[in-house]
Image (tube, rainbow over all chains, first blue to last red; front, side, top):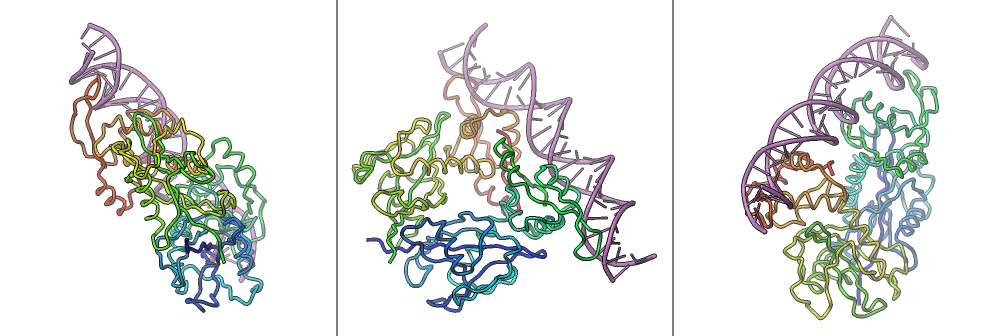
Amino acid sequence: MQHIKLAVDAVVFGYQNEALYLLCVKQKYGPFANSWVLPGGLVKDNESIQDAVKRELEEETSVELDYLEQLYTFGDDVERDPRGRVVTVAYLGLVDPGRLHIQADTDALEVKWFLLKDLPELGYDHQSIVDKGLERLRAKIHYEPIGFDLLGKEFFFSELEGLYRTITNRELDRRNFRKKILSFELLEDLGVFPSNGRGRPGKKYRFREDRYKELVAKGFHFEIKYV
Amino acid sequence: MQHIKLAVDAVVFGYQNEALYLLCVKQKYGPFANSWVLPGGLVKDNESIQDAVKRELEEETSVELDYLEQLYTFGDDVERDPRGRVVTVAYLGLVDPGRLHIQADTDALEVKWFLLKDLPELGYDHQSIVDKGLERLRAKIHYEPIGFDLLGKEFFFSELEGLYRTITNRELDRRNFRKKILSFELLEDLGVFPSNGRGRPGKKYRFREDRYKELVAKGFHFEIKYV
DNA sequence: ACAAAAGTGTTTTGAGTACACCCATGA
DNA sequence: TCATGGGTGTACTCAAAACACTTTTGT
């Protein structure tokens, strides 16, 4: 008879003002009570693992995702949970800035977005799960248009630039970057919007999800080498 | 109390004569008795999931791997095993041609390498696991030097060409491919060997694993766009 | 008028691609 | 001598990279 528990955990990133944020919850019980950890929990017998992630996120944080993918399964360290053998399937989630400021904690658990650069010490092996998630995000932003899930539906071009600068942690040439992105013809031009600070007002854009899918079906491959 | 079992399964590919092979075992008991399935089985309480894969491969097939990586965790279909909830962590394995012909079945299970193009109907959802494995192999061969794990330690250049042709299922320009691969300076030239058939004899090469790691540490990125 | 951010084009460079002939061996 | 497979070099093309000034707004 096997005594292994199966859990899910979610690495959920948000982005605002040139900075990445990570969604954490404060553990109430157990060996890491009062530590910050990733949202997650045990999978139920009759739910898919993906549904388990969504349910836990809903229960613990009330956050809905704009993007979700399976990340990696952590089960090589037999003692990663001091209470017994737990294998966890980690997911990577992304949310747009509209969800970045939590409404109210659902069930008395504390929930918080931490600046990724300023994370507290996380319980269990959750820091290594976060590392894996960040690695995936960094890799994938070059060859899939997942960055758009970290922006609002409508965004200034400079926000997209800032997002790529932040995630890749490198400078980029604004002219070349814009030329490349626009060449895909995946952005709908929404026209000029009042500047939100000083400086010349800029155009807003919307990512054309439908068009992206069409193009992919025809063999198109999103790729940003820049940055 | 949770009633989910945790298993591992391995998609193990081999390559020989311009063809990919998949390692299968014949199921002895259960709902898929006498079906061919992927090698695998339940994880033990005190072993890492990666060790579980290696153990099952050893027990069921006596095959040792030249490459192993975690592939994906299949647990969304609650009824993927008719006997109850089983979530399986699938791994992708590669072996060199020296291991392609099985020595003897360890414990009366039947073991067989099938031509990938000519697979029998596999039990459970194993066909979709194979599909995922093949997808990963096809993607990864472009940006990591994992193809070498499907060749012997010493190989003719034409074998490498054939491997890429086979896996990508496309023609390639021999001159450009050779130029590109050699430009990495990752192959040790072992000199000319007697031809194994008719035609001019060719040089053999060895992949410089150590050098590859050095280069990666310096920021090198293996990439074959060709093919 | 000045500071701040947005918008825009051209040139250079190098990697990807296309392409065809000679060489060494076994039969 | 012929069939088979191995080895090699050059020219073209296009996308990536480098690069700086003008425009619009708020203060």
